[in-house]
Amino acid sequence: MDALIQFWAVYGSLLNFMGINCLLGLSLYVTFSAGLLSLGNAAFYGIGGYTAGILTTHFGAPFPLALVAGTLMAGLAALLLGLPVLRLKGVFLAMATLAFGEVVRIAALNLKVTGGAEGLINIPVITQTWMIYLALAGAAYFLARLHRTRLGWAFQSIREDETAAAAMGVNLTLTKTLAFVIGALLAGLAGGLYAHLNFLITPGEFGFATAVNLLIFNIVGGTRAWYGPLLGAALLTALPEVLRGLGVTAGPIRLFVNGLILLLVILFLPKGLMALFQRRPAPAKG
Amino acid sequence: MLLEIDGISRDFGGVRALDGVGFSVEQGAIHGLIGPNGAGKTTLLNVLSGITPPSGGRVRLEGREIQGQPPHRVAALGMARTFQHIRLFAGLSCLENLIAGQHLKAKRPLLPRLLGLPAARREEEYWRGQAMDILELVGLKARAGFLASALSYGERRRLEIARALASQPRLLLLDEPVAGMRPESLDKVAAVVRTLAQAGMTILLIEHNMNFVMGLCSRITVLNFGRVITSGSPAEVSCHPEVVEAYLGAAVCHA
Image (tube, rainbow over all chains, first blue to last red; front, side, top):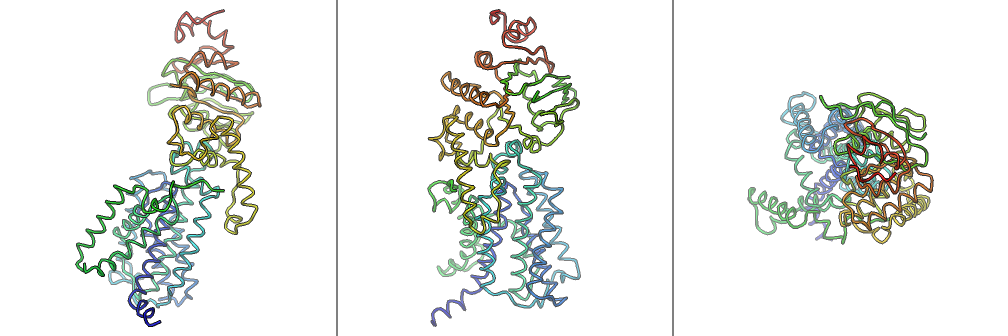
């Protein structure tokens, strides 16, 4: 029992961050599963976090309500952004969503209501570990089931070949928008949970580095099933602690090890870590 | 008439790829579309399936005007197609290609899935059976679990036809279904097309292999430089002087 308490004291916050990052990994996974390369999910994470945080801190809103509002606000932002930018493909979509991310970060940096560069402070600490993992379990279950629905197959069709998907009846605009919005809803939920974990959120936490991290979670873990990004996010979040255990404390060497893992995965496991757990990608099940 | 094409034009910048093309495809026919390279055959198929909007003219499918509609709407009205350069879902298995291809017919709603209701499983079993039947028709049942990218060239052509069939179309457009195939694979495709036509499906196909076209089609339309030279039975078309000059060469006419 003592060992458990001690473990919790040391690693409790790591488990929280792991859960949040897994949720963020899933948020990009949805968008990815429809072949959309988005770097905007960090911004949706920020929109969810700031919306929920402002509601509880400045307006005394109850936490569940703030969480729902943050989630929906991120989804709404994705809907409005998606209408113009989802016409773009590949790298161009990545650039447009990246620009959106910068707009959101700079807005958070300069607005009064977000607390500017100092960040939003005095956020009530409400989020519990079980809440994060409940949200994560719900999201994972939802996505695992979504995979075999009409919409899930439409996502895969678009990812594989957009022209062929349209010719067999997939409404490209609608389907892509849904993938984008569902991803943003999950990111917004993660943001609301994160904001109430820490007293404080700052604009830098939702910037380019985070956007790229989400991408790396997916690439390292794999994008062919919901558990891929979970593997990636869990491993890469825990890595600094593991390295600390091995006696590596300095900053740059950790980034080096991160990069090395990414490189090794791309070279030897192009389908991500999840390829280690299955014989063939995406087996046909009923 | 299942499909009526009337005065279809399409310009690409200063190039007129299609210039007032008009012909009709009868219900249940196997209709061939031939012509030299650059005649506008694939452009016409792209216009029909909504991928390229026409610059002018009308297309009616079962009396309904469809020109300028997006591809998914046209597909919903009962038109399916294959592509000259095969466009399969390479990362999915053969069976999964067909399951994805059932988009317009299989509802696969989310809620029963989330709740794990038996209805969801029954629906899945039904559509899986439908997909397997189509794979059997095109001779790919034994390949159901293979990745599409692992198939041979001829098999991929047939899988693309199978995926088009998964949406249960009334009109099937095939863009060079036997291009570059060995004779034995070619016969398999011909047999599939005949079976479909006997079952009442209408087929419009582009093909350069004259034996295949002449042996299979009940009517043929010849395009050259974006215009229809003639439409008629294989015998009429192969003896038409302009067709012989533009495309076939004199030796083909046996009339």
